[in-house]
Length: 402
Image (cartoon, rainbow, N blue to C red; front, side, top):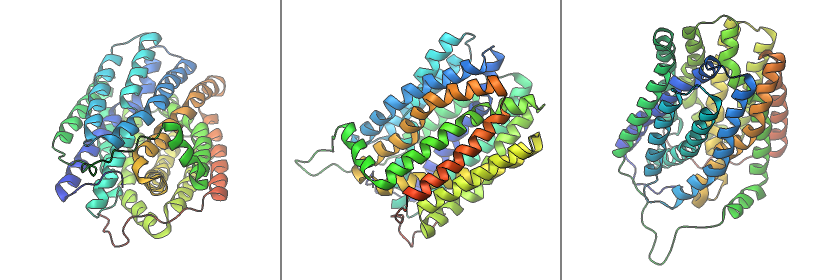
């Protein structure tokens, strides 16, 4: 376990509030950032290049954030630092009108935020296990936060402008940092004469790569993210082109999160009963169905319906990926492993996927991005099926799922 914590119910409740605020902050900004870029006059290719700037910085720094977390007695302090930094970057970005300053701020935001996701998941997984609860019982509160803020954000933006998105996201991040101030958990000090592991990053990465299942997972995620990132990047713009208002765009982005509310706990149960590797296969199959519906029925109602299917897929992917990675990786490198898989690998793929998606959008439109996502998802499913048999979750079989 990454963090040996004397966890209690109050810790779990505090983390649930934190997830509500932290992921809810993204609900203000992420669905509407593409609209902001287009409003500022950027092309699809330039929007893709901004993703590349963020990806390059994130893939370089995320493992270092993980290594710092694995060594610190109170890793939540790193999370708080990142939250405050990203909040300030968002406020500054909202005032920019040119590509150059935007690229610098996006890169700085990525540097400061690279460790937030894996460090938060690693910390929470440890607390949830100590409290004998499922990871999904905490993560679902992030989905609730996203659902609330993306709907409220769309309504507010339609009436006051896109500045409200950045202000709302920054405020939620700052509140999340305050909530973590009361999280009084810490790793126990190592026995006298012992020190925390300090293996070189290349050695850690090599250890993970030697595991056949983790290597197969890396290839699977690489193909999946390469082919699907463009669709997510231009989803809101596609809705806008089909005539949807900002409120409808907010509702569309909210639907997936609403679906996640019952399916996150269900994913917990599925992982415990059938294994995290089967949950990942199910997530990919559902995502293929999600993209197939968009292809055969490219309308606003179809996109909103398919988003619900995508929410089910995301629920299983999110829970299974965190569990699978931490149960396979050496316990002393769990935060680093999560950073490598959930940030570094994703951002490494994003270096190519951002420009690829932007160029395809400029050349053929968002519809063909859904076709690319469908093909890539099917290939990823077969790779995962051939390379990953998985092993059962280390979650206690009698642990309650809250």
